[in-house]
Figure 1 (cartoon, rainbow, N blue to C red):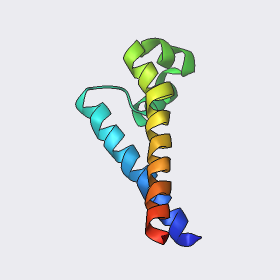
Figure 2: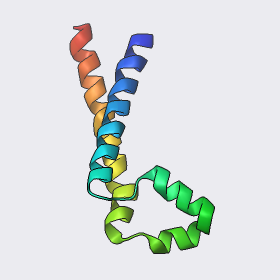
Figure 3: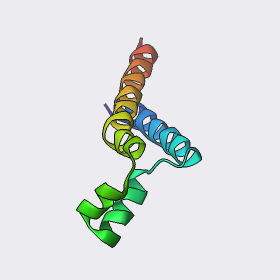
Amino acid sequence: MIIHLLITGNAILAGAILANLFANHFNICTWYKFYENILANGLSTALIQQNIVSLCWLFVIYPIILSVSYILGEKIYQFWIQ
């Protein structure tokens, strides 16, 4: 059970790190930057200040990347235990 959690958790972490590197490279807003903006300006202002690419990234693409990372971790675990 612990090995399963470690493998899938590390796969999700690796996916998140790579996704954040990609976002920073292309100057797309990450959750950390978005959260800082919310604290500084409030939620409605922070949402209005984002462009459509950043909003799609935060609420659609990034969750999909994390989901795919989880699935990849599951596949790695299944391959490893066989």
